[in-house]
Length: 161
Image (tube, rainbow, N blue to C red; front, side):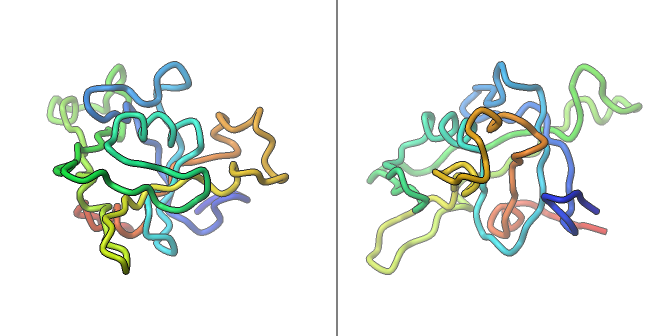
């Protein structure tokens, strides 16, 4: 499965991504292309989405790609919620209309060698000062995606076929 950017990765579309009751896709889109990439442990996001999520979390971040540091006393963290279909056009069957998948962000916390708690959420490296990805296109599903790494999958009961 895949295209030139995601060759061989499992891919799907997430709808209504939210945290703390805030729609993170906002005025950009109702959904976003998402891939599973277990070669990276983190949740990786396009810069515009990364900035929106981090605005709602108790973290201190640096401009580089290093994971953000959790502020002391900031736990438990909220959940990241999404659906696999548009709530306006759900698949047939009443049982699907209310299913929301939740990723507890607690599952994305790890402790560094110096004892600091870090959140394994990162920006797509394509958008951090890279010449290969023009900033004007960073909100295009053709050029960017949400990536679920192994720690995200660990928070879910995940089966791929």
